[in-house]
Figure 1 (tube, rainbow, N blue to C red):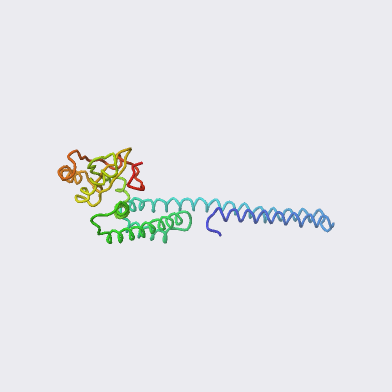
Figure 2: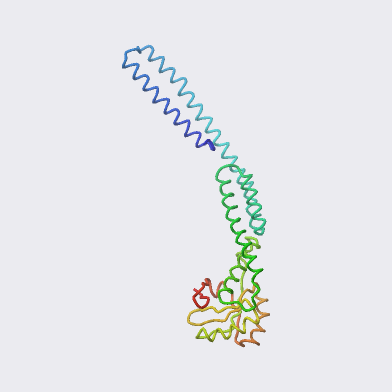
Length: 262
């Protein structure tokens, strides 16, 4: 209940208000009953001035002093924990999990502790999803996956890569595609896909606009994609080309028959 200066200040303020109300009621009843003469009334007023108001002023002064001390302590704590924010950004998911768990325990009570606890819960969820995705990829040994299996494989690969990479590097991670060709019908694209899977099992059909593109996916560097491009040109389509996933298609959704570039 009394976890910070603001709560204590409000509580004491209400106490003094209550004392003032009770005192007013007592004086009123004494005056009404005629049992309080003017001399006693003056002494009673002096008593309240000395005890109640002096105590109230002293309490306020003490609270203001403590408030500044608490604020100074908060700033020091923020400065201390701020340096670890960069460290969290520069480590992989496993280390982020351990760091966030540690700070959720040692952080002082209040908003900071709550923030670290919430972050630990989120990283814990990511870790559980990472383990599931990792196990799914270990079981995924199909050399000729269906459309849905290819999409699931891609999602699991992204989850594993995101968790294993530091946050500071996630935004700089770029995926490259080799587009083997485009067809006006899905059936024609499926024929191209059969050949693409033999080169890269992580291949799929992506509908972009009115064209069904046969795409070889999962290249983390342009150099890696360029190396595969020569093979694709020889075995699938001589007009194949490389694209940057983030600029070529910002969002890919699962459609009824193939992936769709939104």
